[in-house]
Length: 167
Image (cartoon, rainbow, N blue to C red; front, side):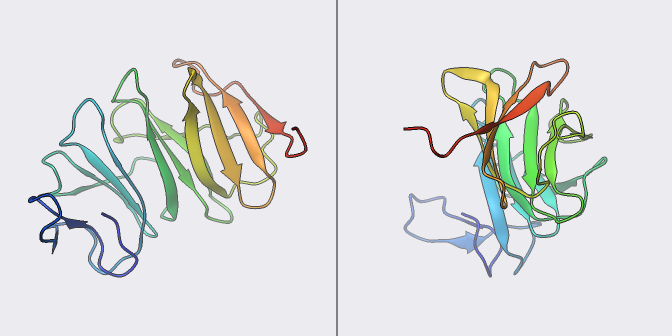
């Protein structure tokens, strides 16, 4: 579990007891956490400072970087078809947006480039469309929800606003 004041805490006895994990950020607000559905020992954690990956169920952690801005990782998605493909969103004012990795977070590429024309780089939440993993919904800081259509080779092709007035 990611916490606002104690970093990451984990239970290994179905919630009876909880303890901080080793190597993860200590006393840093955790803003996102996701477990790889195909590799349950792989856990990604986003904090206000860094992105971390544990490959052993939370016992040890390594920072992920490679072209990521520093911090405020608000959402993490693992592609349901290929666990090495990961997307993160950042709500940083200048460097925020959506970033894509093909190698389990070692290297990253920004996918909300000028071509996508997202009016806000501050992306707070993302979710895959359950019917189409090539469609991602991205909620921005002040500009609504956007649909990002992508294919696995290009990462992102277009974004369009989803009207909040549709009924």
